[in-house]
Amino acid sequence: MTISRIVLASGNAGKLREFSALLAPLGFELLPQSAFGVPAAEEPHGTFVENALAKARHARLAIGLPALADDSGICVDALGGHPGVWSARWAERQGQTVPAAEADATNNARLLADLAGLPARQRRAHYYCVLVLLRSADDPQPLIADASWHGEVIDTPRGSGGFGYDAHFLLSSLGRTAAELAPETKNELSHRGRAMRVLVERLREEGGAAGIGAAGIGAAGNEISR
Image 1 (tube, rainbow, N blue to C red):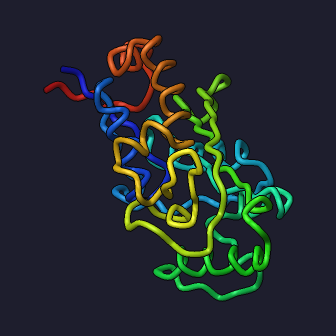
Image 2 (image 1 turned 90 degrees about the vertical axis):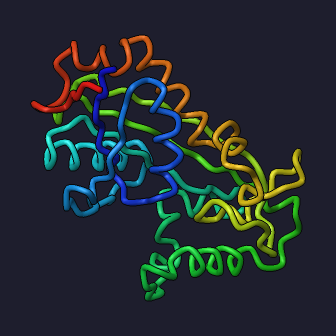
């Protein structure tokens, strides 16, 4: 079997697990950019797609392999779509100093403070994800897929799975938070899972790992036979 390596332009272990599970059946091995000593890219843009492109290009230039990046976040109606692209840095964006190990807890606390006193009907929110796969740093036709996942923000965290805002993101139709879902269920329903399935279908149309290799995408050594 031909295995084609793709770099994930993120060091997030949760994303690595989710994306790897979806890409493996097509013959792709997903490696985090941190395995190559590549630091995180700047994310200065105001849109998800621009940030995803910037991250993918940063990894592609540094490592020389096809690069996959996502930019995702939680968008709350009552906050005009915020935190949005600032989801991973929401507390920091609001002027707080946040140790990396405490980022999720601090961001959640900041979001709940912003929504304090609002009833459930005003706590509607959605997760949004855009994925970008660059074959080359100057790829004129990057593969792009996006999807949303709708729910509401609750004060009391529930569940120990997931990451980010998952324990506070209630799916009304299921009566459970994203953090209470089994991994396979989350992959089926989530914004990232849905966006990834769109991307996977595009990759399947191109022949999966063998198609990418045949197209000459990536640096020397991208393919390994098993």
